[in-house]
Each structure stands twice: as C-alpha cells, then as structure tokens.
Image (cartoon, rainbow, N blue to C red; front, side, top):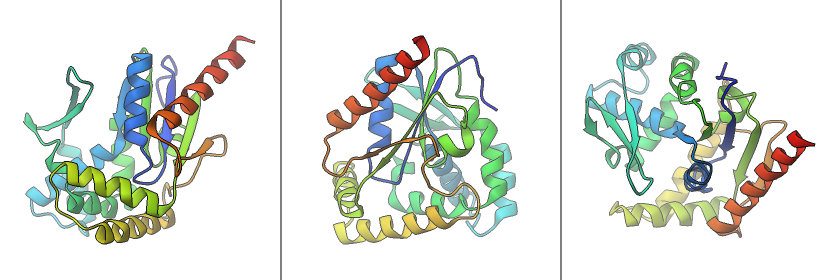
Length: 231
C-alpha cells in the first residue's frame, strides 16, 4: 500500500481530459510531488520498441520491466522530463504510436502488478498528486481525494490534436478521434484495473470547461476535504 504518512490526490480519466495539466498545476500549488503514471507505461513501450519486443510478448515485456530504471525530474518551469539510461526521452514517448503501444501492453495483469511498486514509490512527503487511469481505484485506493475527469470524445480529440500539432507531430483530427475511441474501449473493457471512477471519486465533466475552471473545481474539492478533516 501507499506511504500513509504522505497525503495523495488522484486524478483519473480518459485521454484528453486535461489530467496531466491539472495535476501539475495542483502539485505546484501544494508544493507536492507529481506522478504521470501514463509516462511509466510509455517508457515500457518505448524500451520495448527499442529492444524489438512485441507488445504481444508478455513474458518478454515483463523481463524488460524488471530491468527498467526510468527517472523523472522537473525543470524550473515545472515541466516533467523522463529519462531512461540518462537519455531524455520526454518528447519521444509522446509519439502517438508509443501511446497506442502503452495502452496495448497495459492490459497484461503481470505488467500492471510489476509497475505498482514503481508508482507507489512516488508517494513521499509532503504529498503526491497522481494522474492516470487507475490511480484512485488500484494504485492509491486510500487517497485523501479522488478526482475523475471526463469529457466528450469529440472535445478530447480536438484537445489532443492541438497538443500533437504543437509538438510538431503531423496527424489528422480524424485519426486522433479514432485512436481515442479505440483506446477508450480497450481501457474500459480490460479485465484488470479498467478505466472507471472510484466509488468515492468526485466526477467533473470538462467538456465545456477551461483548464482554469477545472483547476478551480479541484482546488475547491481539496479545500472542502481539508475543512471536513478539521471539523
């Protein structure tokens, strides 16, 4: 289980709802650590491609995972960088095909179990803001606050397409929408740790909200939770 000495806020939801942005804003406000759990799966997918290990080869992937030692650091502007063997692979793991591979290999229970300890190590004082798809349901079930962000597939596709274009990744909006629908189905239907809100999660629909409006709602929920503790 997690380090109970450090509080945790989890932010779950499908791709394109703004989990990462809100998590980083919140961690900066609270001066807490931040975990982008999706980046860990992307590191595995990147390393597997580099080692020519198929996403269908669970045994090969598991051996790879047990030998991986990715590191994460945040620069002066609050941007998290991902390193593997001292190489900054932040931009490379954001390629859409790496994201697809990460989703495909994430269905294996053995892989998810192997990565649990890695993710829980991020829980350190003063606290942790963790974003992903099963942070509140599996990785940090005892989190002090659980947020589940959602939005329409159309809105999420537009946001993700804009992000990819800003990263100089040439992809059509139609392809991004199709990838989102495909990943939603895979994430929600997998046998282990499917994408779903925790029973005690606060659900926020971000379809018509700006990042600032979503962030304000999350901060409000945390403030309310703190007031409940004090009362």
